[in-house]
Image 1 (spheres, rainbow, N blue to C red):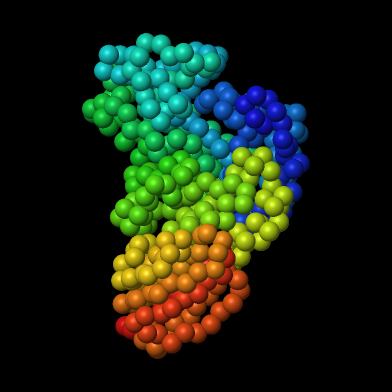
Image 2 (image 1 turned 180 degrees about the vertical axis):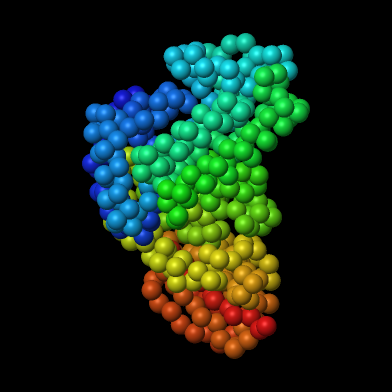
Length: 396
């Protein structure tokens, strides 16, 4: 349900959404507007099932159908800001507002990616930033527990949770110093939220909005909008243990392949998030081929750390992206080579990563696999939008 009240799907549609997701090799659905008021309304309150769609019973029933199909559904939840006009906020939520040094609430500008210490803002809905003080922690965790356990989601996406680290001067929130309110509050909330998720679903995941080394201690991945732009290498190289994502719309074959080369999850908003990916069957097949390749080369790629172009030199068009992944524990290296222009092309690859056996396995999203004789230089030819992973077992 959109913010303006337009209803695109109900709980009965969840299994069909899951079916479409599986057709593209994607076992996770991130759903917005699942709650009664629709997306972007009633922050941070009223995260309850929509009775017009059958309420909690219909939601649980259809979530279970999705799980039986092999798809996990991740619900949006934002507990970090509040619409100050709601009755709940006037009754109790106002006590949790973070305060500036002048004692005024922090207002959420552009959905809190910028914060303004200003007495007024010209907005249709005015939102205040909510600090993770002790009382708010209880409310936040009660809501998460209800969503992941009582409603049966078993997963969650914590919107904006990694974006905010305000200095809170609200005297009722301060236990030590103003700069510790958010640090200590999040350190209390996140491990408990993760515990609730895993109690409900041992394979459940908790996704943050925005990649962050602090919150990443407890989150399994992050929803990052356009992490590929403009220059993700320093982040991924210095924080290889964190998982991020990149936004993808229909027919963006180039960015799907770039995201694979950087080992980023796909945040697929098909037709802006309103359509199933199966509306574009060829595109769905491509995404699924990449997903299947990811599984086949998991030890050399999914379980390895991003090392950018460490140990390799590449000659060829910049439309062919080459990136290195190193699994130090197992001595395995994956070199991803991805064509992004939709044109056949070739590169020459010089690599210091040499296999003990003298043989490199090359696995492609086309389904082809071959064994290559290792040499200091390899010439690789790729088909349009082909992704190839060179799998190297290093000498001990």
